[in-house]
Amino acid sequence: MRRFISLRWKLFASYVVINIFGMLLLIGMTHMMVVGSVSGTVTDPNEPMVTEEEALFVYLVDEGVIASAVTVMIFSVIVSNEFAQRIIQPIKDLSLASQEIAHGSYHIRLKARAEDELAVVGRSMNQLATSLEQTEQRRMALLSDVAHELRTPIMTIDSYAEGMIDGVIASDPANLAIIQREAARMRRLVDDFSLLSRAEAGQLTVNLQPLDLAQVVGYLTAQFRPECEDEGISLVVNLPAHLPLVYADQQRIEQVLINVLVNAIRYTPPGGTIKIRAELHPGSVRLLVQDSGIGIAPDQLPMIFDRFYRVDASRSRHSGGAGVGLTISRHLMHAQHGDIWAESPGLGAGSTFVIVLRTNGVS
Image (cartoon, rainbow, N blue to C red; front, side, top):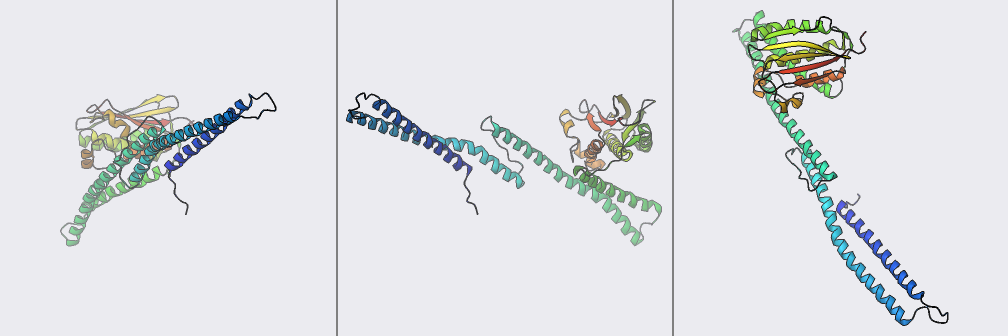
């Protein structure tokens, strides 16, 4: 097993070695220069190269230089130790912080000691810790929400099944339809997480082909119109007469539109309006789903496509959903070389989801 030597001692040793070589070089050069200057004054070849007085002078100069070098060496050792400590301490802080984060302590934050490369790494570490802390909070909220989402259908299925076994509840199509609806609710939740897992692993498959977007919008709005009427929401569709074909996967586009429409209905109060329109751009079509709902605060817009993020957690829990629909939609659009984003003037002013689909490659 190799012996562990700290980086601090390696830096300190390197400073000391450099200083020793520097001092030895200084002493040697000084000695040579002094001897050369003394011996260079001899003009008679019969005279000795160096007199006793000159030898004493050389000796005294050497002693003075050596004493000065030792003094400087001692001072440099002290300074080198301090410099090594100042350099290593931020690295030790980073190391300890990374270990804490690795063990799940996401609350830790580093303080910058100076504006240098290590300070940049420290800020990045703080951002990482903040991101992980927020993700962990959402994960805990998700576990609570999933338990809440599953509890209701499970209890409904359990009570109806028990009632049918006891003969209290009739096994007629109406009651069986209730059980089927609750089972479908659980299946949708499981399917959402399965799809999100595959999307984040880069395992989504898409079948891009020319697609009539107006036909897809017409089909889905026909499905959602009864629900909108039950909620007292007006659903308005205004598409150009000659909308070009888009290059997309029909099933995936339908998933994205369903997620966006479900969100619009969920956050639009009775008496509100949902408008679907399209804009033509070079090489693409932008489908805009605009609602008159609760809106989105400017600081929340960058986060609404993050998994488990909810604009209004209390309403989401009441309305259902796992908080991954928009995350899935973003992955689905990127897989089709498209895009999706949200716009909102602010809280209480509604929101608009923009879905970008390519027309390139479509004849």
